[in-house]
Length: 326
Ligand SMILES: [Zn+2]
Image 1 (cartoon, rainbow, N blue to C red):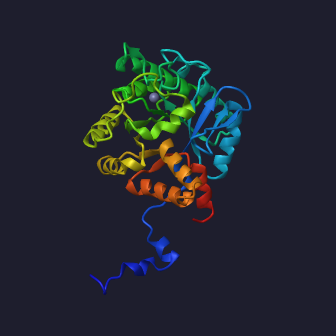
Image 2: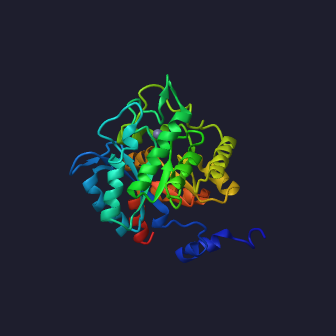
Image 3: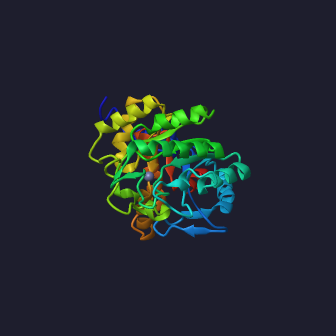
């Protein structure tokens, strides 16, 4: 059927037609909102490169969680800024560490909120790398035990799901084993299976104060030029027991999200990272783009590419827009 018999514009003529045949939708419960937790009391500090995103002390979390819940956003992912850092990132797996306290606070004050935790060492190490060091290199196998301890301590504090983001080889199975041996076999693992060494993380490193003190993360995070390698990484994580596969960043890696969607039957998550958020916010502030529409378009594009869920700093803004009937 060709023109003039077939006219695609017929079904675009009204909003009802457009809504009727819309192929992709986004709902608030498909978004996970990242929270940065820092020491102190009554602290609510805006991240300068991420307008609208705040670093919060533990006592401020319940209010934030309740706002999310009122908008239909039912999950948060926690990142912690510890009081002090050391070579082994011991704040990451301390029983009374910043994230462990945050989990308990949220489970107490907002029990309906699903609490996911980022599992990594970079916010807790004085050198800023995602594992412990042997010389100037990150020691993969020695790091695994520390990551497993971190994940276990999150589960013990009440985390609903753990999300390792370090890109060490073998960490999913190490974490699965540690959780299972301690009766946390029902705590799922959302693996940052395909995490690229990306410049889009810039603003996050301000927010979480975790820029590496020397070198960069290219010896463990993936080369942005590689796509087949993403499938190998994801295959390993599936075999090791991951429950959800994540791609990070999102918008510059839609092809990777799409490949994972085609190749695997596990849920696929995508992380719309700080740089993606900051670029949209900054251009909108300058009046160069319509920030709301670009936000909505980028999120639906990530869903269309195949992501079931999206970690995004826009979760609350987008949920508000959805509630207003967009
Ligand atoms: Zn890290």
